[in-house]
Structure formats: structure tokens, C-alpha cells
Image (cartoon, rainbow, N blue to C red; front, side, top):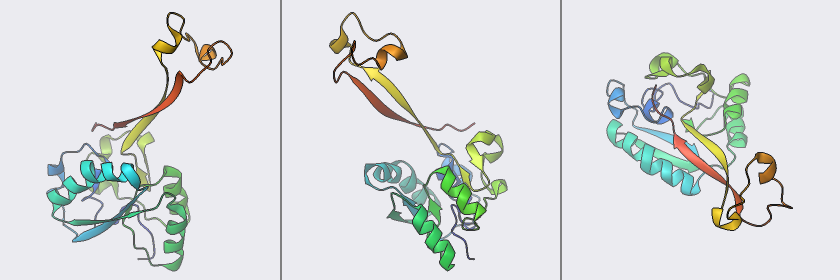
Length: 182
């Protein structure tokens, strides 16, 4: 096989619980088990959280070993592994556009959605031939009510008006929310 695989054929159903996150682990009980796979994410606290919340439970449930690597920008390695015909990664947490361009360039194998539990009920906007969404996040604009007292920003125009609403009382916060099965 000469393609990097966001999900290898041997582990597509095994990691369906990971790829769709909130699936009950019992849905993977019918699959054939691989001994080990290599998972790649961005590293740091983010990957530590993935390990605790997703990878460790999936590995325990399936009786497999999940080796991990970190690549904050996975695309150069996807391209290199695909070009050399020596893929070493099985599952890659990378932006959707990397999966699509990798698939279009023959570097990433298309997913077999018939082997992914609940894929049929997943909204089309959350899947491509080469990827499935498993987490969602938002940017939230907020302000400190103590900073602005009785006269806080009321509109987006106010929020960005640094003359009338100056100071460090505004922030952008990233909130992460796990997807839920449909």
C-alpha cells in the first residue's frame, strides 16, 4: 500500500469510536483487531487530553496499542510518507483540507464509511471521502463585567470600539465541545 491513511483499512472500524468520539465503545466489539496503530496529533496539552479522553479508552476496549507521534503541521510528513510509498502513520488528526488535498494527490486513502458505525447518520457537512469530524469548537468574544460596570458593550460594533471600550477587559476564548452521536 503506497498511501498515507487518515484511517487505515485495518483500523477504520476500530477507531470509529475515536473518529466520531461519542460512540459507545461497544460498537467496535465486532471488528477485527489490529495489534497496534500509530496516531498523530499536534502534541502538548491537546494531545494529552486526546490520550486521556479518547485514545486510552479505545486502546483498552479494543486491546490494541496506540503509538503516538506529534506533528503540529502534519502535511509535510503526509506528503513525504506518501511520496516515498512508506506510510508509517495510521490515523492523523489534521485539518480537513489536508485530508482532502492528500486524497486528491493519492496520498491518503478514502474512508470506507460502511465500516464506520453511525457514519450514515452523520451530517454530510461533517465528512469528506477522506475524513470525519470528531470535535467542534467555537471562538467566543467576551468581556469582563467588572471592567465596564453598568455600560458594557451591547453590539459587535461596541465590542470592537477600543476608544469607548478600551483596555484588557475583552478577550477571545476558544471553547472546545465534543461532538455527540446523532
